[in-house]
Image 1: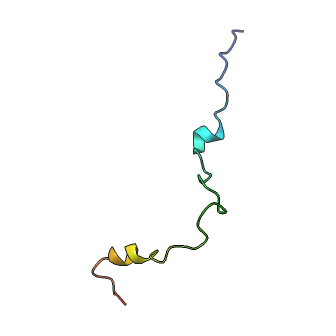
Image 2: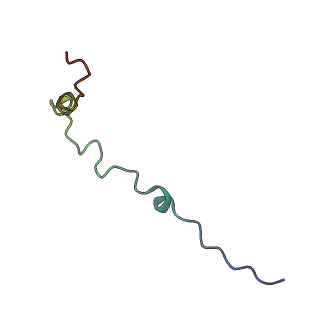
Image 3: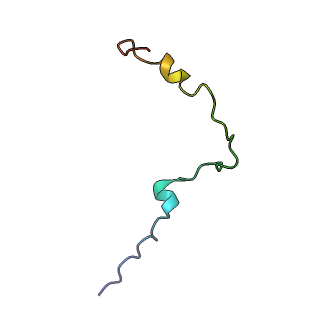
Length: 52
């Protein structure tokens, strides 16, 4: 019986899914969110949506 070629080792999870962790942790980020968080969405709202 001929020797079967060896399979490549299983790929690492990082190779499959990439880096899933954020570059900073929550304790390194600014604890107060910016006040203008919704400003972009309100400016980009389509004209057929109500503006209240």
